[in-house]
Amino acid sequence: MYIANPYGRVNALDPTNGKEIWSYKLPSGAPATRGVEYFPGDKQTPPEIVVGTSDAKLFTLDAKTGALNTAFGVNGIVELDTPEITHNLEDASDGLSSPPIMYENLIILGGKTTENGGPGPSGDVRAFDIHTGKLVWTFHSIPQPGEPNYGGWVGESAKFRSGVNVWGLLTVDAKRGIAYLGFGAPSGDAFGGDRPGDNLYSSSIVAVDAKTGKYIWHFQLVHHDIWDYDLETPPLLMDVKKGGKTIPAVAVIEKDSLLYLLDRTNGKPIYDVEERPVPQSEVPLEKTSPTQPFPVKPEPLARQGMTMADIATVTPELEAACRKLVDDNHLLLGGPFLPETYNRVRVNFPSEIGGVNWPGGAFNPQLGYFFINVMNLGQMQGYRDPLKGPLKPEIVGTNILPGRAGTYRTLRPAGRFKDNESNMPCQQPPWGELVAVNVNTGAIVWKVPLGITESLPLDKQKTGRPGIGGPIATAGGLVFVGATDDNRFRAFDAKTGKELWAIKLDAAAGSVPSTYEGKDGRQYVVVTSAGNIFAAEPPTSDAITAFALPKR
Image 1 (cartoon, rainbow, N blue to C red):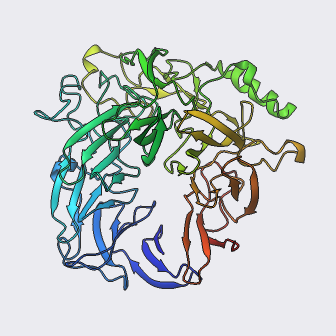
Image 2 (cartoon, rainbow, N blue to C red; image 1 turned 180 degrees about the vertical axis):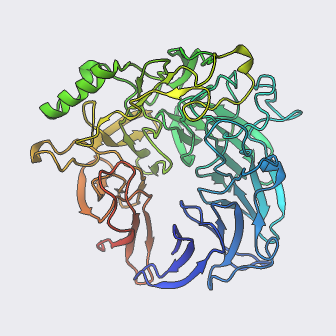
Image 3 (tube, helix red, strand yellow; image 1 turned 90 degrees about the vertical axis):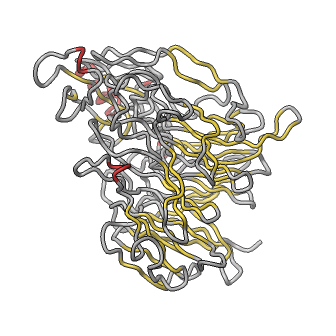
């Protein structure tokens, strides 16, 4: 078992007892926190662990010994911060927050770029040869002259543009030789007045030839993204049975929690998608898209908006605090796709952390069920007048930095729509759910609250809880998931959604579990727990916990 250690190490463990086999200390930075990649080896190179780092380096380690492969790159290291990526900008860097993915002899990777406004590193996706570390291909995240779909950025608005990057997880259809790239929002995340138009390939899935990086198709999930709704979840491959046909499909979902089922060969939706009118921005110089795409099936998996009728009544104290929060700050409620407001604060659902986040979903091919855990959290935010001087039309085409030290100031309150004293959201539960979708019909077959609020009386605790982490599904008809900030790890019946058991850990399992058969013939489920960004208290420990399932 190979672990990306947040303390600057890569560890190899015996998966049956957790004992360390080897440990490699990085010379600088830390490995991508979402994991490492495995290369099974070939005639030229033995099995290797592929590691990308936070400070933009790429290297490989011998899978058996942990020794650095010095034949790779220059003395074992490939520098990812090349002039083509950094634009020669001072302090620009494109390290990795997620692991690369292998296709044959190619290491395919994205990068985390920056979420702030202003010039920054490119979000291009690249492939490197596992044997030498040499660059094989580059896919430009913003189409360049002569490339498909060029011309979607107005004037100079694409120059030195950052964001539009694959900071999450990639997927490869090895049989067809197709890589699926999920791109995030452009920077700055919450203001697009300096980037008119839909901004391809931001918030899009793009399919490319895995050997060459050549464009095949794309589908944009959010036009002109100002909600930070990045497509960072790994595209999930499956077969959909519809109309007597079996369709090779890919499931994609952004933080907005709208699930799209697409034909993975051509990007066409398997179920209808409608362009629906959405509220327009009132922020000066901002021009949001008049419509956004909505899948007809399945329905949204997480909350998309609210009214005062949805204020939480879980306790009288929570209701009073939340009503006061709304009334005192004249909060604007609505949705979906409620844009940033000007000189007032709005509440948008889902929040910028998403109804879903990077871990993505799982699939049971026998049932045809797609599983994913969602959060129902609102985001409070709005902009006020400029820091210095009036806004001018000629500002469009420059890089404006809203909400920080730039043109606009962020209004208060800002952040999650919740009561800070109780750490409970301000809309009615459920605040977190596990959802199952039948991909063969597009229907949600079950939803169950995921997580408990222990501060409430026992009969009111099943509220669901926010959290980041993802599920896995097993052939035995189970779904395992941690994620929630109540620090539980749970097992569910895949067909019915019934919770079978829950174990309390020392910290929230903000990760995706893994399952395997050990050398002792037992099936194990393993999960890491290291706290949660929504938790009221810091974690007491970072741990990796394995559970041996009973033999059948």
